[in-house]
Length: 474
Image (cartoon, rainbow, N blue to C red; front, side):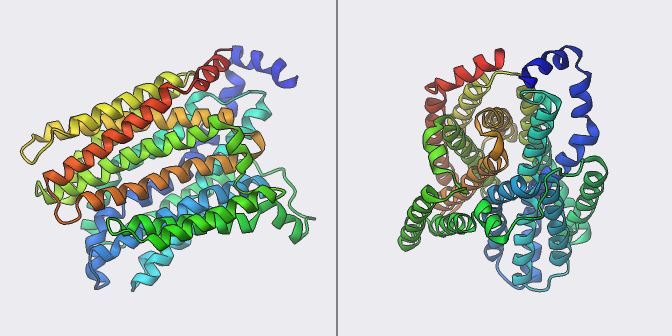
């Protein structure tokens, strides 16, 4: 009743919500949220230099990318669950410290094993930012008497990530060229320190009491077996996807077996890490995960596949390819900003699906003789898709996820995105199995068309999105 009575006055005056979600509150959250895209994008220009320094092949450095994605896919929902139990501010701080340690360790590394360890630490640390931010935003909205925060607040998380991905490869190329590959790890230090200081000063302390709980009670609340089984499922799945086009069927079998054990365990768990019953009953939330994962799969396919094609088939340098992709990231930030200003979600989701399909069809006509402006225009379509869909899917999740588990639910949204990125590597690896050429790009384009059609159909037929819009209108 309190929420219903307070909300109208806040919306009419505007100032209470502006104070509640002002720069001092959102800035440290955005800083924490950009740590993951920083480490996803800046490492790319450093891989060749790292291979030379570590006396390994460039292909051997791919583990530095996959290790971060795999760790993040597992750690995002796990960090969300820990934030729900111990407090989002505490988990946010721990995550930043892990990023700081990983950055220093990676910059000082002298072999690949230490570099992989550093990337795992960075992946785990950066995973705390997004789910902690979503939980802090949810609690701030409830404390202020709002049913949901201003759209610009949630949109800001997507905009910060998109802007970072837009300039990351180009700036990374400059830094690595000037200061060496260690810069890809040192860059974490100033960002982590700034985020830590701002969070310490501007984010209120967690009110939750964590003392007095027995280890057994804490274990029951966190569900370590569920987290381990979830991680095992994703790890085996990654091994299978990485083996394509020569499938490692035993790895897929292991993934299926562990997944079955995970479902069986979570159905009996008092506080399941992966709430299978919720996913089965709340199909709107489940469809949001799938829609987000498939859309990002399409975006990552063009991001990675087209980059390889530009360098190998067109003869561009990694830095030049990164410059071509800047408009894609910039327009992603712009479309995220526009979508964040809308209260309705169905129209942005359908528009992003149509743009994804248009971009996929346009890619079919690319070849080695296509002008650069055509490549930029096509990638721009995918940028518009990514920004709008990310914000809209994030808004749907916020509305559909139970308030008590918004941290875990937010982490799972990111997990589906990471699965999409891992699957995109399998698609591009299969298409460019023997040679990076126009034929391989054509295969990638047809895969994109299929992905886009699925996203468009499932979005257009999702009647629950209309219900969500009607609720937002009231």
